[in-house]
Amino acid sequence: MIIRTFLESYNLKGKKIVPFCTSGGSGISGSMKGVKAAAKGAKVVKGKDLTYVSYKSVAKWTKKKVK
Image 1 (cartoon, rainbow, N blue to C red):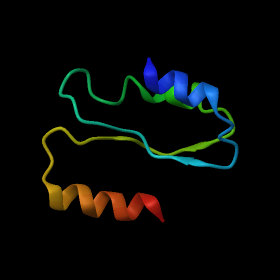
Image 2: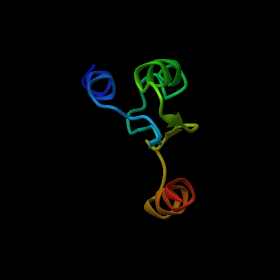
Image 3: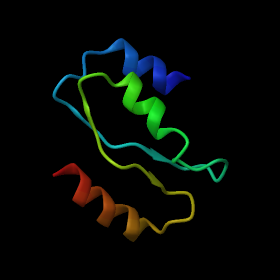
């Protein structure tokens, strides 16, 4: 809920949102619809579950998404 509150509280028009999670619970796929709805006006790119990913893999993924 804290992420949703943040996304709803700020003007994110024209911003790029790169969702990720670090919990093995339900993964990220179930959250993407909510993130897109809360981040009105923002470009929300495909998220990633980083729970069991190496530091090297995270760094590589981050470089691709931040461009």
